[in-house]
Image (cartoon, rainbow, N blue to C red; front, side, top):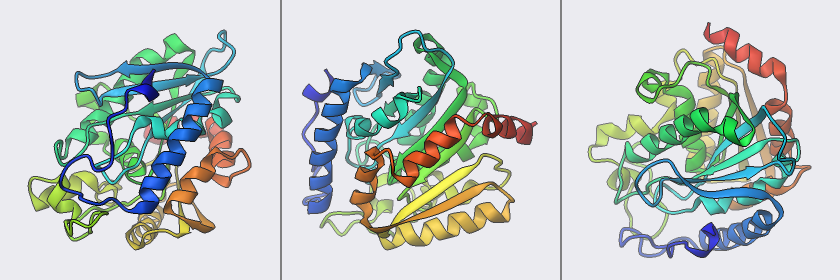
Length: 305
């Protein structure tokens, strides 16, 4: 069982000697809620899509084993590129699998042991696995939506936008029908401080060279995008999340993309994500609407033809 074999975190390495207390509390609560969700859902856990122990994904499936051609949400956890588990995200599955839909929570390699492009490669490898294999579990490979919270939202955005890499991974334009990025950073230049008390920037921890920041910055890859985006953050979120989210919305609008923005009032970065397990939450309602809307699916196909 995935929840019984988690490596201790944080800190994952000596790079962060003290992780912020709210982040630690979030991880504990997210794991507890996800363990309860896993007990209620039909699951296939720890499916390997690569040789590394972090290159695994969890499938949360509809109760009806006969369900076929259901939409798929490919979800990436947060954790500042250096922490986190795919098991953090399972608590969101019940509000989607009852549609029915399939919720896929993805693990990926973490910094500073694995610097860019390792996490992005893992995200693409997971997308490739889903495209090739999800039909065996009742999913529709033509209705895949990318989603994530914090840096997970960054990864979801990158695999949506970095279409020039699709041939390398055997993917076609339009494979992702929509992207939901919650509380994400959309630029990770080397002057953004990483969480914790190390005093290090993200550039110190996730890149080999300062110029590599473009690999982790969705804002640098918007040109030509036609996939709808839903972007959100909390009113009490981190300043770099607020600033880069505003810039991302503006840039997408400048490309005449479909983009919606929502502000979660009265919440911080972590509370915003924990609220995504509530079926009345705006993010959940919008996702349930988009992934079951045939017009969204068809519009993406047409816009890339």
